[in-house]
Image (tube, rainbow, N blue to C red; front, side):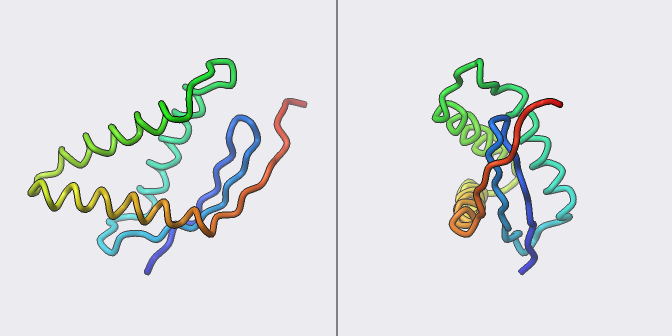
Length: 108
């Protein structure tokens, strides 16, 4: 199975290195990586340490976005929602083996 190695660094300096398994029908892993980077960038921009956004609110918004995107698929309800659940479970499973660390944050 194809994988997507990915590193993210939060505004607070938390580092997560993960390897995600890609769905067997992934069209282009580069597009997946670019969209993931775009989503993470928007989150970093919208969630600053000064804004005090609750982590649960962030997860709730992402869950709602996943539900909306799944609903846009031209497929039966059971298929598209089953696919969304499968992809979410697969992504969460990747976190079990993810490496967590801290990096330096600041400006020279």
